[in-house]
Length: 155
Image (cartoon, rainbow, N blue to C red; front, side, top):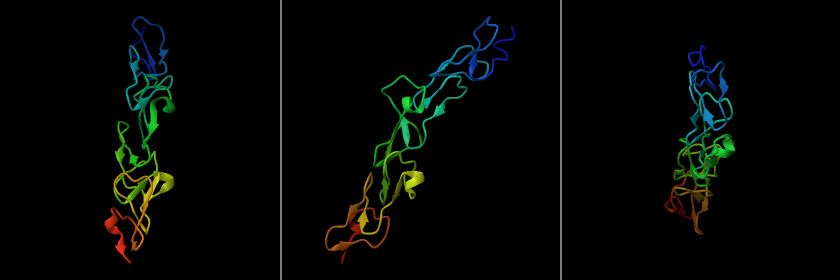
């Protein structure tokens, strides 16, 4: 038999096998695999996976499951006020910005593509904001991106 010497990706070829076997769900099989490899945290593997698929930005690995077959099985959205680009942990949103949840960058400026926005005029947004905080009565912030209550000046 030619296997595992010509075993294709997405398959595995145990010794003495006559043809490649499809890689099972929850596992990945790079070319020349003799056995399937378990998908790790922050990834998921549908059937016949050659390389594990990463959780998308704004999402992190679910640690409460061993099922890593679909994105929904393996990944969860970062909560509001946080963001992620590394698949392992969510970090607080940068001051001066609002993170709505599943946010993809620390300093979002586009609600549709990044799931967040810059803090609007008349408000301030400390680290970890999931909504803007209005300036108190008698104070106003005439700029976007206010980071602390000190951005709100006396009228």
